[in-house]
Length: 187
Image 1 (cartoon, rainbow, N blue to C red):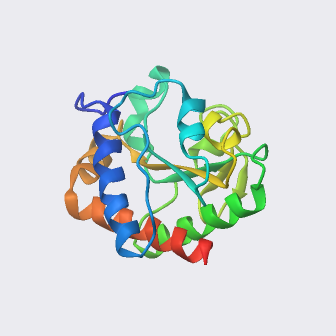
Image 2: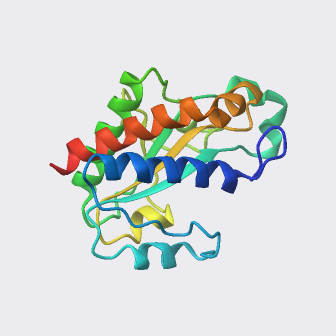
């Protein structure tokens, strides 16, 4: 996946994950980065390496299917995903909702297009207000042995949103909100 200007999604993910690591550590949490070298192609290898963690957070930036690229600038916002196949779906939902609430409090807006039955592939809401969707076959969410949340921080196919996601101050605000939500959830 690439951004509107051709930057690989991995670069956005790594920058935000690094900022998130710093924010989580400042909140007193122990953090283990997984896949930061881009070497874990198989998603279940990521969750295997996370065994023993209290929460698995998978950090991403949303792109879209090619047929939607002509409308790319219509789609913006964050999305959070959990799986009902996760062994602790209740805690996954609680953490995702707490993170979504903190993202909203930081001035970010949830994306709604993932719930659309045609465009966004019909991912039903688990918590609409906080941008949390069920995505039961999402590998990192259902193969994790602990609560798991996949974060789509923004839609980098959107030209304006890509610029925001590249801004270090925006990254810090997003990371701080995710860390605060995760910390509240795990207390």
